[in-house]
Image 1 (cartoon, rainbow, N blue to C red):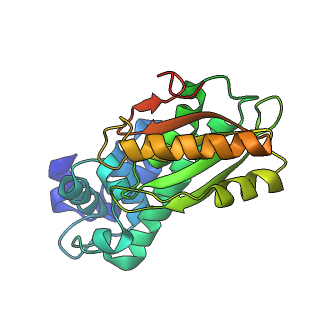
Image 2 (spheres, rainbow, N blue to C red; image 1 turned 180 degrees about the horizontal axis):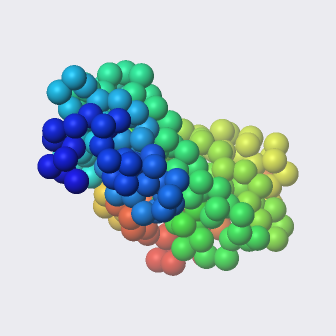
Length: 232
C-alpha cells in the first residue's frame, strides 16, 4: 500500500485501501494508527497524501503518547498540518482520553488505589505540569466529582486546604482521595508531597472529611501513600 500511496492521491487509491472505505467495511479497529489519523486530516498536500502526512506526523513525535502531550501549535508546525488540523487532532485525542476516563468513572465505588489509577491515569500521565486533583467520595466511596485543586510548575504544586475542602464541602463529600502527577514519570513522593499530605490530612480531620489516600501518578505507574503506610 505504501508504494501505491507514493504515486496516487488519497482519492485515487483503490477503494480497498482507502482508510474511510476500509473503516466502513471492516471497522475502525482494523485500521492502523496512521490510517485513523489520515481520516482526521482528510487531505494531504500537493506532494503527499493524508496517509503520508499522518505517517510523517507520527514519526516526528515518535509515538501517539508523545503526540497527545504536544500542544496544538507544536503539531501545526508539521508540514501539511496547520492549526486547523492540529486542533482537530487534539480534539480527537481528548475525546479518546475522556472516553477512557468516563468508562473508569462508571465503577460503582472506589475500592483501592488501583481503581483511582485506572480512573485518572489516562489523562494525568500525559500532563507536562503538576496537576493536583481531589476525588470526592460519598459515604459508600462512590465518586461524586473530580476537582482540579491546583496547577503547579514542572517540579512543584501549591495546595491550600481551603481550596480542597471548599470543594469537598460544597459536594457534601464524606471523604477525599488526593491525586497528583509527576511529569518526570517517577511517582515516588517528594518531601513536599509528604508535607502537603500531612497538612491536608490534619485539616480534613478537623472538618470530619477523611483523606483516604494520596496517589502520585508517573509514567503509567503510581505510588499510594496509604499502601506505603504514610496515611493510616
